[in-house]
Image: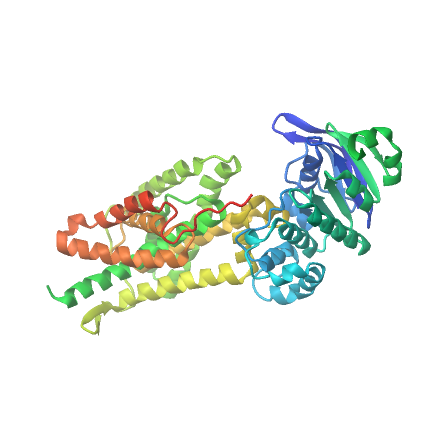
Length: 238
Length: 292
């Protein structure tokens, strides 16, 4: 569903990604792990068009999307839930969710009716969001904001979801909750690329994983294979 | 001194103040999406008024002139966005300040060359006869100003709060990158806000010109007050600009009556200085709350 081939990207003159290649099959959860500064978030940003890749290819459902603007790529079916959650603070929870489906809804009138089904799905997954639907998103707790960011990504009914560090800055209990949700998304057949610091938890939910070091993929394999790899155990699972 | 005269002065001033509010509202529209404003907005008001007057002189009926004028204003707004704002924003520079000022100067010269330096009357089908409200006389033109301002602002506020596209405005304002990730094109949203802002400026020109006159210098008098209103009210409250606009207009008219017309500009400037010193986010503005 998502193929990244020999991707080079960076900021200004400093190159962060030096030839990243990875694949995400339809209906699978793929984890991207690695130390701080390895280029995980940059990979996400280059895939979703937040930064322009210098070279390489990004295929979404077989269609090349590298070099397009972020809003174009989103329209083609990619939902990127960015690092730091980035909910629209002054807007209500429900408005945040509606904007998640921006490309599928009428611009002026009747968008609420058209979004009702999607909203119900997200509210079923996150009852807390339904309770707070009229509250400004900026007043939610960190965990609730993360739920909202995931819900907002789901609203677009995307081909692929990129989830960047959903556990960042959250209490351990909430982190567990986030991983439970990822498990439920996986059961419902969502295609997901997950960036995580918590390598252990990420490998528990993933079908396949890539380990990034200095801007490229160092090791890849199924979680079972990575658990056999001594380098990975020493660096990330120890 | 007679209370009726004071009330009369305050009411006529307040009605003028609503035009300042409308121009200030134009600042708010672009500030909301792009944190930039058009410093040539006064010239945009003036150019649109001249253009509308030309349409009338060519024999266009009044309603067609209004539509034509509004479209002209919107088009000019788009020109400002493309020529003065977009590149600067892409480079995260403040170059739009200088570029929009230059746009204003160019607009002023263009108007002087095309339409001449003289102030011209602007005909209107609405009667300028005074109607009597409890001893205060209000002309039909003044009522048209109030109705026009509130109607335009009401429609745009409805658009901003009740349509998905309007919510996208707020999303771009809150977090441009995140909005892009939702498939909302920030560039298009900013274009649209400049178009709307230009249209609002044209409306202000069409409403005020029959009361004042149309001339190249009308811009500078209007813009300073609109700017005071925007800063005093804060750059994010549509309700705020109307309240402050009305207050400033009334204050101005009373000042010029009691102290002489030379002091006319003083209250606006004093309010501006006071607001910047005491409440830089504006009386109706929200302080920036940043949660980490």
